[in-house]
Image (cartoon, rainbow, N blue to C red):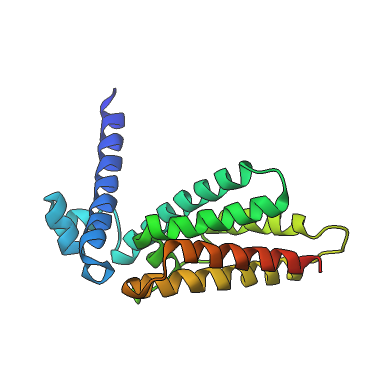
Length: 201
């Protein structure tokens, strides 16, 4: 490996270390505790070094948001590809979305602003658009033997999302008051089935 390649590799490793340290701080102390100083202390660098990789804390949050959408996108894609019928795809994809919210709670809080004040997701982020597009394509396929417009797809997308995101938010913000996982799964699947049935009713 030449010196140029070695330098590039070390830069990428340092960048990854910064992001990993930021996520670790958040997982142990919460988003409000995140600061450039704490990240520098954790990776044993000086704060100015971090500014060589990210212009500010918002730059780090943006990259973590991108990472979250990559994980979510992979989970939704795998759920979609495990099924043949559009109805089954739709349910599996939203269940994967639900599972992501609780297995990657910190990412979900950042991506969707649950109990957060420090970041707004960029609507133009390619990874976020890919997640929306996958869900939108399956929603379009649910409209059987009836004309469908972009507005129809958009309305149903936000109907699904608002109910599922609302249920997730209730459980994330009030973890001690959470209903049982079994009951949540039943509510989730009933909601998904109800919206899916309404498309062709």
